[in-house]
Image (cartoon, rainbow, N blue to C red):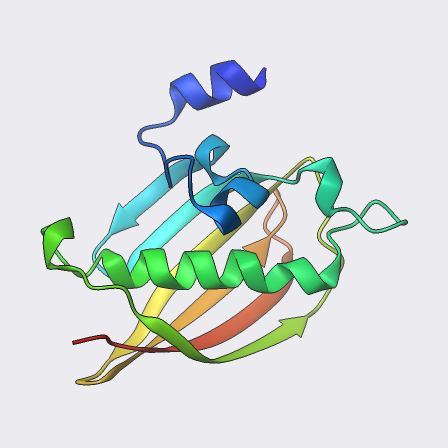
Length: 144
């Protein structure tokens, strides 16, 4: 499937172009597989400019994916997007199990605990056959 066909087949655009981090990871080309309150699953491609010399996702860029999925997952808790106020990431832990290889992989974000002032979100990276690659837990401070 070409990039254009993939974009056309997507149910919705994950994040419109114009967001620096989103543009860097080319999130406008991602396909949302599942979205419901507190849960999002996305089919993601791995751009060449994010590869290390072994043709794997350079580990330093993993946090960009984690942060974007955590924020987007938190946003699904709000029925009206206008009710969502951007949150701030206050803590992020990333555990690497295996290299993230392209051309595609799956990101899944799930709200673990939605508290009064913070939200805890788990992010999983898996390959296309379900092998666990990366696990992250992120704490977001809710902006009031």
